[in-house]
Amino acid sequence: MDEERPFVPDLPAGYTIRRIEWDDAPEVAAVYAAAYPADTDYPLVETAAVRSTLLGDPDVAAFVAETDDGVTGTATIEYDSLDEGNAQICKLAVHPDHQGRGLGRELLKHRLNVLHADEAFSGLVYSAAVTSHPASQHNLLARGFAPFSIHKDFQGGYFGPRNESEVITLYTPSIDYDERDVYVPERYRHVVERTLANASLDLLGRRIRTVNTVTYPQADQVEMALSRERGFLWEVTAGGDESWARTEAEIRAAMREEDVHLMVPVDANARRLIALYEPLEADGFSPAGFVPDWLSRDGDRRDAFVFQHPPDDTPTEVAVVDDVKALIDTLGLDYRVVAAHDRYWDLELEL
Image (cartoon, rainbow, N blue to C red; front, side, top):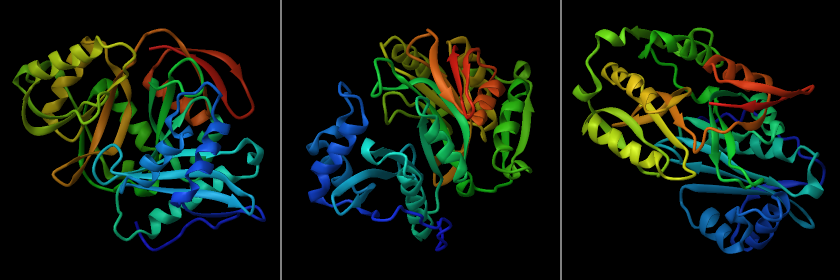
């Protein structure tokens, strides 16, 4: 991003952070195994998975926190994680014997410093915070992240029997300030305004153009470019030759699969793609949020209005901090307050 390292390390005495090495794999797997429930199917509890995922992938930079006695925590940067040019802050785990000492905070700061010092990287930095750990949400928001979308039952149930919901948070200094047009129906204008206001009072230069969809061409008149690099992800950008009829048929087929959360980020900088909002809603999709710079098309960053279709419509419990609850309120999602705590809320979330 740049040569500046904005975060001053404040590790507890006796701890250091460094890049992972091949011989660390057994200890790293042991940290994940200790941090996750005993019956988890999280893959990185296995040494072989640590080596293939964290050491065998050139797009992954993994780090360990350690003392003289061995590895105590681990965390990762994944480059080109969701789209070209971005970086995901992910895979944090701290051994239970060393939790409560600020290692999660220091591993986050260390990775952000690495990205700031990387002259070859200038993209969007994001993190998907699970809703079972409000402390991780606090950690991200305190370091310059903000919530932009929330996805119900998105991730495999690594922490329990149910799938985990996730909050997509962006490191706001990494978002481009760009005077570009954003096209959304009038009913979603407030979603774009309030999410962008998390990062900039002047909305990062975006110009919000609301369009009357009643007078706009129908979806079957729109051609698009569609990305299906992952089973859950259906990115829609302009400039392609895919038809909506074909896309909708494939999305409906995917909806019939069990236990699959579908995410459809629509290029919000392409005026004609506004024709897809109502058909997606008619197929049972609901808004998950607005994520600036989320997509890449021909080397250009594009903003995304994100729709979601969870694997089922049963309520799910989430633990969220105030800023995430405010996002849920902005999206108009239904929920019941289960409990209000000093620093977070337990909600029963519906869609």
